[in-house]
Amino acid sequence: MSDPDPRLREFTSLYRATLAPLRRYLARLLGNRSDAQDVAHDAYARVYRTMEKEAVGRPEGLLFTTARRLAINQLKRREIAPVQSADSNIIELSPAQAPGVERVVMARQEWAATELAISRLPPGCRAVLILCTLRGFTHPEAAARLGISRKTVEKQHSRALRLLRASLQSDDEPSAEDDVRGAAGR
Image (cartoon, rainbow, N blue to C red):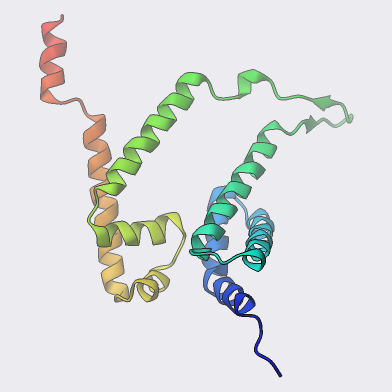
């Protein structure tokens, strides 16, 4: 009996290591477990096809990126899908229901500020924050992944959230210099 294909072994290992965190991540993005399961299935299928064709340097990164893009596409389809009324007439969503340009720009600015704040976190806190908050790992899963204790993960996660919150709040508050300029212009 021959050894199974190394790529199949690699995919099986990826599947076992990421199934629970990926489903939690997608459930948070999509708002329900059923859609999360469907998107996770599609993401694994796409990653498997890619891994069959070529070696993948970071299969977990490819999986989460693929899953995130599939989830975003599903959310977009939800937003633009026609709504069916009781008498089966189709009602199109109006452009007024879409977010305005100002709101989109503000959201992008907030996201840029958040990315900058995350990049300024200490490396250990940043790694824990990404695993636990963005990828949906539990503290024990993150501890195993990072090779540190669960207690350390808890402390670093708490510290990361506190530092992130403080950084984002300080960006929102006007500085004393802004106050002086504002008062001088009155």
